[in-house]
Image (cartoon, rainbow, N blue to C red; front, side, top):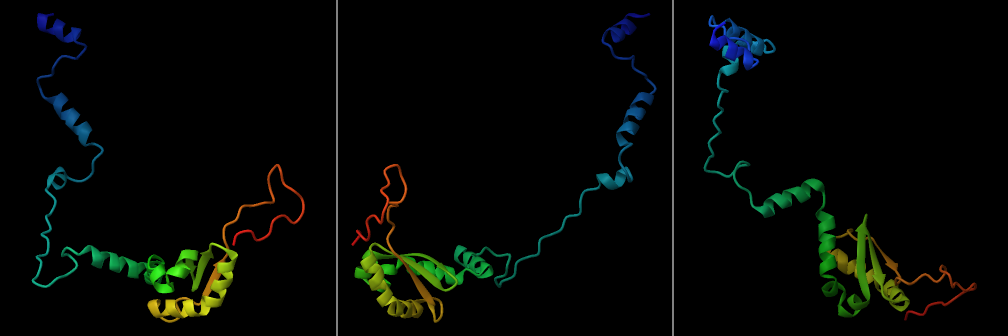
Length: 176
């Protein structure tokens, strides 16, 4: 054995075959799982040129945020809800400062506006004003948007639970 053969065996690699048969076998093993001719796979993908823009605006042109959000709102059917929630921000202007100090809108669904008062006296007052408030809101939003106003009284603490609960009727309206 020559000195070269000893070095090749020490590295743990088989001796090099100079005929190129090993190279051909490794290439064939690499291509075995692939289908179709090699030429077709190596061909560059066909480039599709983008359509040139014209002088008139179309869908490919940049759109303003206002137009895009507006289309999205219409697609989702949120126009009425957005107008009603816009009324929530202008509540004091629409119903007046005195009423707005004591009555706040909470939610809107299916033509029903839910408002909360800060006292039972204002809940009674709001029941008397409900017709005129509905009319005023429908002037702002369009006829038939608000059909009914549900009036809720103030949030009150619960007196019926706890360690020191006293049986009996307990306190009544102590909030105004």
